[in-house]
Length: 334
Image 1: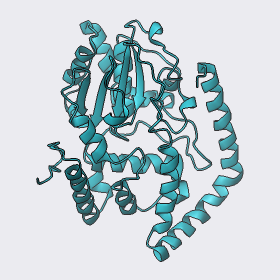
Image 2 (image 1 turned 45 degrees about the vertical axis):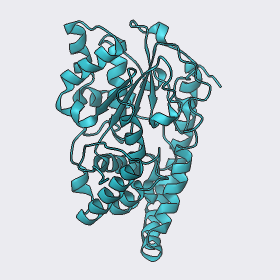
Image 3 (image 1 turned 30 degrees about the horizontal axis):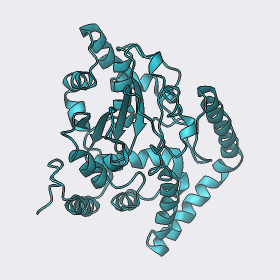
């Protein structure tokens, strides 16, 4: 299936306007009562009602995971940026985009420039079949993904950049993101959210499988494995390493352009160019998609007991994957 950029823009506009009207007519009036109902039901059912709501969202988010790259035809100019959910996806794909644009990328909305085949609604983005590499001064194009390595065609000339992050921080960032964009009154208490985030059926699949799948492929010539924390601590060196991996030679001025345009401060100023279309009548369109980019937020949001249980479950997941991934104090005992 293919569509034009104008088709994607039109669909975003039409769907967004329709949901905005419904929010005004219905959502604003129902949000507070439904929030109270969900809270009361949670006290009775042991939060089963929240899990049912989260399951509905997960089924929608995950519906194209196994078919996203089914008809993909690599061109040799493709860069797949696969970051785990809330592991710095917008940041790393913007870095790659700016590198392909030699530090001077300009766009009205990032979804016009980049394809995301495993999105809940890929038609809000540039079509995967629409190669825009010809528009890039480097002759390269960027593709966004949240998929693990086993669902990405690695046996190709496509360059793949995989990014993971402390799963506790992914969970914390995801909590705020989904509360504003999707869940609204169905937003669970933070500890309930963290409990769900450790399950295999979570949105975009479990963190431990994503991370283990890319970690084991890290020595492939067409794979670059990064952590969010490295990018945060050493942006200059990491961005230079990404450009080198992609085979794109940047002048010092171009490299500075990439670094300047992809700083958190710069991206916050153009936050609206990354903000997705309203997903439903609960979407708060003024919410910031580019928030803090901080390390350690999870410890402030969740209880100590919930964090301990989450760490144990995540470490057990890595153990089931037979992974020796060494970060975040999750190394399983073999």
